[in-house]
Image 1 (tube, one colour):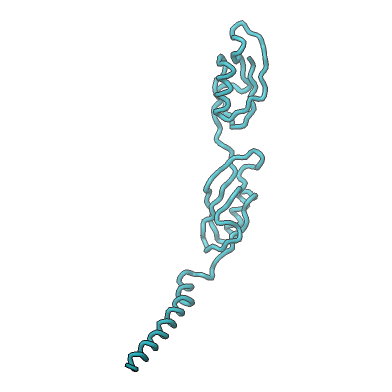
Image 2 (cartoon, one colour):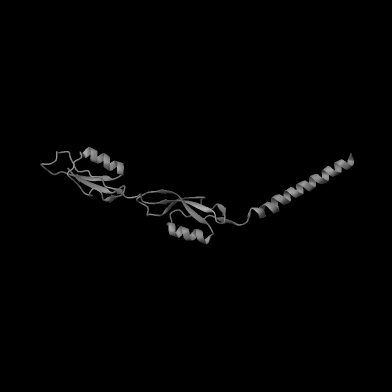
Length: 166
């Protein structure tokens, strides 16, 4: 009985020792634990500069999302994941959200439409009606668009200013 108890104690200590050795030496070597890199802060920098910073640190980048704000220059980084200061491994992809203007749209033909119809069409495209000029014509009614500041079919971007003549 005493011999069995001695074997249990010896193998118990040996098992604990092997587990600690495995956890503190073998696993860190296997997962390359010490080769971590601190993620730099990339928000409010342009995409080219951020690419150079990440390349210096052996990190990669990918665009996760794009948003558009007129008050911020194009291709500026708005957000990143993982956040600045976190530790990551080499060649980790940093996901970036950048400011990118939307694709150009085609200006609709608003001539011969009512002002209400023209307003709805402009709002759908995100265009801003800045001024409505009044003129007289024998061809058009009082509330019908006679002319538009941007010709139909030309490219426009959301937020562009449009003037209509009724």
